[in-house]
Image (cartoon, rainbow, N blue to C red):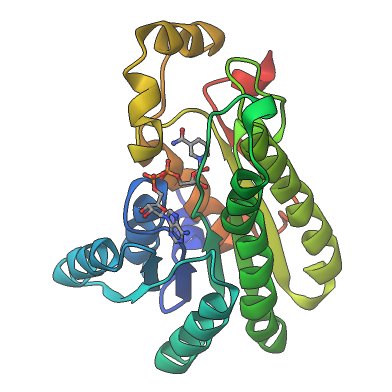
Length: 261
Ligand SMILES: NC(=O)c1ccc[n+]([C@@H]2O[C@H](COP(=O)([O-])OP(=O)(O)OC[C@H]3O[C@@H](n4cnc5c(N)ncnc54)[C@H](O)[C@@H]3O)[C@@H](O)[C@H]2O)c1
């Protein structure tokens, strides 16, 4: 069919510079490799510096352009430094994926204040600081796309097991997304989130060893299964590219129908 343009071009991010946190494995690795395959130059960051190096090497080996940075997002000043370094090395920064995240499945009456602060630092404060630091460059350029990795648990209260720090921070990420989207929309910076269901990554290895829990999760999910990391790629690229040019403040559920019921 003849069309006035090739729709797939809308998904290209050629030359755009992207920074992904927690990109050494799982969804973050998928985000970094997906963006690179669509033409982005990628700052691959992870607290595990070797894992970041491996992912960057894989991208470069495949003909992409990536640099690895060891970055513990629990360290605010390290976020500031790494974003400054990546901006200096690449010369711009217009895509940010706040992906690094941790969870602790502990009953609330045993959830220590230390647990609370640890999870808040990584899952929420880091995203705020990264948005602020990267956002300054994006606002100056009048062009930016931020993707926060929330969760189905950011839009619900869990229910299958206790994990109050996770539910609280993922919920707050949703409203961080909405608030920033509203604030920065007039200045060319779009802020969206994805809300994945349970994905087969390191984060869910322990949980997947529990057969009853797996059955409960699959039974609760209309599509009846966990997601593969690859199934996050399309949503991330959509929100990072011109394909979503009128979309901001949105939380894209990639959840096999979890939130539909
Ligand atoms: N796996 C799931 O079922 C699922 C579902 C919904 C949302 N999520 C979210 O997706 C994101 C990625 O999770 P995943 O499943 O890919 O997990 P994962 O454990 O496979 O990967 C997380 C990555 O983040 C890194 N990381 C951990 N702490 C860090 C820190 N302080 N600073 C920098 N990097 C750090 C790890 O080294 C790892 O490479 C998280 O925010 C998670 O909450 C995951």
